[in-house]
Structures are given as C-alpha cells and as structure tokens.
Length: 186
Length: 164
Image: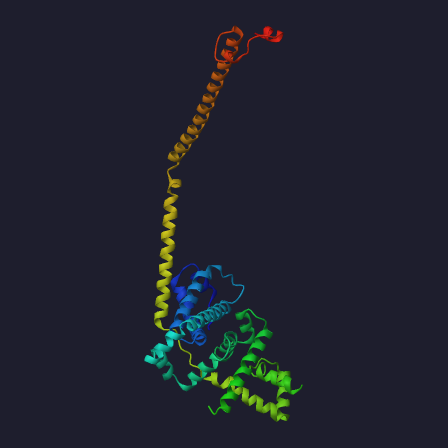
C-alpha cells in the first residue's frame, strides 16, 4: 500500500471527497485483497471493503498522526475482515441444512467461479482455509502483502515475538498439511 | 546452535530475511553441515512460501467505490436534516434582540405579580381568621348564647361560678 501524504489526509478529514478518493485509490487494493483472502468470498469482501472505508471516513477527523495511516488501515482491515469471517461462519452453520438442499439442486455462481480459478489460487484458498483467522492474517500480511514483522506487529497491535510465534505455528500447520497431502497421494 | 533453534529460525526470521547478517551466516554454516535441516528448509519453502508466491492481486470492483460514495452522501444528508431539526427548535433564541428583551421583561414582571398577589391573598385570610377569633372571645365574655354554651355544664362549683 502506498504512503498517503498528510495534506490529503487532512483534506479528507474535512470532508473533501477528492482527497478521500485519493485515499481509497491508495488503500482499496490492499483492503479488498486482504478481506477477500480472509472471508473467502467476493461479495462479502466487497461488503467488508465498503464497511472499512465508511469506518475510515467516519474516524479520519480523530486521526492524530501519532501512527502511520497505513498501519491504521491495516488494523481496521484485519479486524473487520476477521469479524465478518466469524459472523459468516456462525450464519453458515445455522444455514447448513438449507445449503445442502441448494447444493443438490445445482452449483451456485460462486462455486462455478471457484472452479474456474487457477490451480494456484485454489491451492492458496484451501491452504488459508485450514488456518485459524489469526494465523491466516499473519500469512496474508507477510506472504501476500509483504509486510515486515514490525509493520505486522503495529497493524495487529501485538508484540513482535507474537508475530514470530504466529508465523511459526501457521507455517508448521502448512507443513503438516503438505505432509498429509503427500501421504494421501494428493 | 542446535537443530531445533535452526528450525525455528528457518520458520521465521531466516526465511523472512529478518535475521541480521551474523545470524544468517550462523544458519548458513549449520545448513552446510546438516542434511536434516537442509531438507527441513526445502520442505518449509515448498509448503509455506512457494504457494503464495504467485498469488493474484485483484482490485476492488468499481461498484465498491460507487456504493461508498452513496453511503457517505446518505449519511451526510441525514446529519444535515438532524441539524435542521435542532436549529429549528432553537429558533426562538435567534429572535431580534429588542423582541427577546421585551419577552424576557414581561415574563419577569408576570412572575413578580403572581408572587405579590399570592402573598396579599394569604394576608387577607389571616386577617379574617383573627377577626373571627376576636368575635368569638367577645361573645364568650358577653355571655351570649351560642352553640358553644349549650355544651357547658351548669355552674355548681366555686370556680365555675367564678368563671361563668
């Protein structure tokens, strides 16, 4: 995500839409991708992205430049996306019976879309889905968005050693999955 | 450094290029001499790094920004209409100064007048009460017949004779 100049942030905080659009352009890629990887569904990711930018717009006037806007955006994104993922999971478990009926009647557009994705994308999605939301978040921030340990720690408001231990556990889990896949001849 | 420490670094700082030069050299020396750790490094890279190397980087669809703009416009207009209601209620305070001063003075006079009239009404009641009491004692001393005397026993003892 690109750095956003201070004057743009100040103008957006005063309600100037052009300045806010500049912030959107700089941050929306990161926000949408991270949301998409966490919630694993395009329409939910769009909803989460809208929600995040409404939060940013509503809270910009309280931003005091003590931290980087990027870090603040990373934090709002990860927290909002994880909350949406958990909410969806609860709703899904409630709707399981309904979904099973739908599946027997035919494939949804999302399933078709998923089938059309490249093998690499399918592998990424299935690997991320095996991780806990917290482990998923550190892997996305590190492996896909390329954040440093320091940035991840600030974004998630956790200790840098917690970043290390989450990455270690997430990678151990991925290693375990890979071994099982090899064992099962997948 | 033993294998478990090296494996920990292979899963974190060494793999992510966060380790300093001294540490990197130590790990590389160990990898040069330890086949098991070399195999472990290969497995980690295959399972936890390579799959994410070519991850797609999609952008948010155009409709997302349109929806955000609409939501902002809606919330701003809601804020404005709420402001209109509040300012409408407070319009009385925006009256011209002389009119506001006249209204306030009238109100103060009304309050004072109400207090005075209430006070004089109380005074009249007290005056009336005392007049009744004086009449009553006068009647008693004159020995006039009235309802009270009907209940008085007939004088029989000295003190009663003295009093009545």
